[in-house]
Length: 250
Image 1 (cartoon, rainbow, N blue to C red):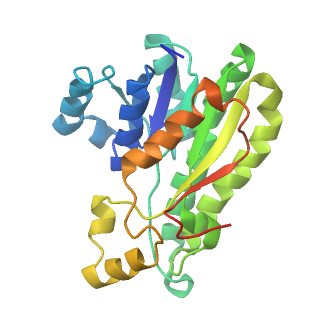
Image 2 (cartoon, helix red, strand yellow):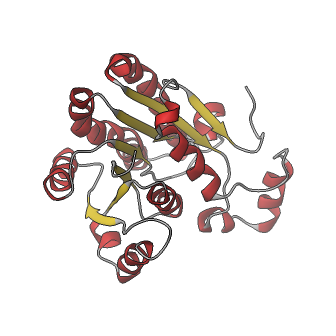
């Protein structure tokens, strides 16, 4: 697998960075795709450079807006021209705009569906033909426990995340005989800056509902993603992989 090229959308978020780092440690050539303001920041550039001195290699940064089909096309073309053909795509970009349905404005619905679901199509469409022609590909879609069980105040987010797995199952059937696997990973509550902003009493209630008694760590999600991107995972496709500490069991 050494030298294979992996793209990670939302690559500069906390989970995205963990995935990039783990894939880099596994000898993938990693490209973090994110919005211009994120890619252009000094923090992102410093992080990218530091990866060259870690266990893996430097993580390349490329601007992509997953809500814009043409932006995705330009970004993937840049990767192909400057680095090489894409072997792995991790669709990790996502946003929330929470509200109960009676208060949910149309722009909040559109923003979440366009980023979290349309973005999966916009990116995957750019790389799937090359993967099938070359006879190898790994696509991992980062969904959520709330796409499986639903969540109060998240009709938009839950719908988008559930839709991601529908996409996974359908595409997996289309490309299974071409050496391409397509899987979904559905994390539960993780120890991230966003979750840690939840009021302490509510966060305590959330943790109390998790059988393992703690929040997940982004490196744990990244380890699962890296396995699904490996040669050893060639017989796993069309599956939704829950990683939520037992919060929701099926």
